[in-house]
Length: 237
Image (cartoon, rainbow, N blue to C red; front, side, top):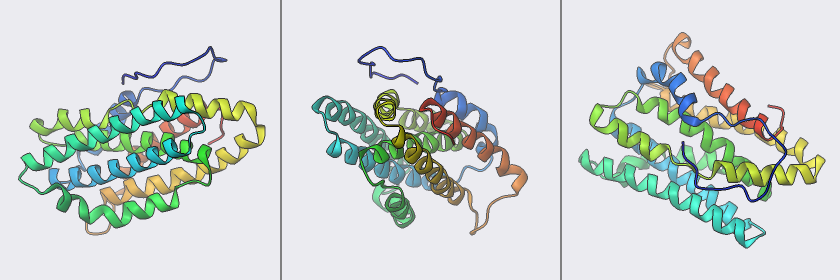
């Protein structure tokens, strides 16, 4: 995963962020067997991208410095470009993109309301953790798409999304306020439950999950990647 954000100053060495593509590879085999029809997959992905874009837009609006607003804006624009690619894929399927996304609006809007965050730092944690978790999840599911859609769907998911910038901003805040660390750790633990619920619902068939033996390895890998993201911030998952 490429990132066009550069760190602005030298930092104390921190835990390495596991590349999202590596995590996705670990869950792709299991998830590829559970991929819904392309129109359903792309409809859910497309609306999820809108939610993640709105989250980043809130981070832009609340950013205290012009430089941070500018960098976060570029990340939001990249995410919106991925959403546009998903719309184009839906059109190639003969589907109306808005109609394909509509069935997922209620659940994903509710997810966004529950994970908004109380201030700028909580918004940044939401952007960092939920975007990473859902990108891993949807990349795994994309493995089961027909060949002619798979690579383009993966490209729409695997944008940089400013991950390194989010880590830099959060670490700077945490280093300056020990109390912030405890609060954000608690917020991160809450986020993983809400985000996992989004993934679980995407796997449901007639309102029920496939067998536990098929889904447990998937969620174990996704939670493991979430824990590594928390570690990168020095937070306890």
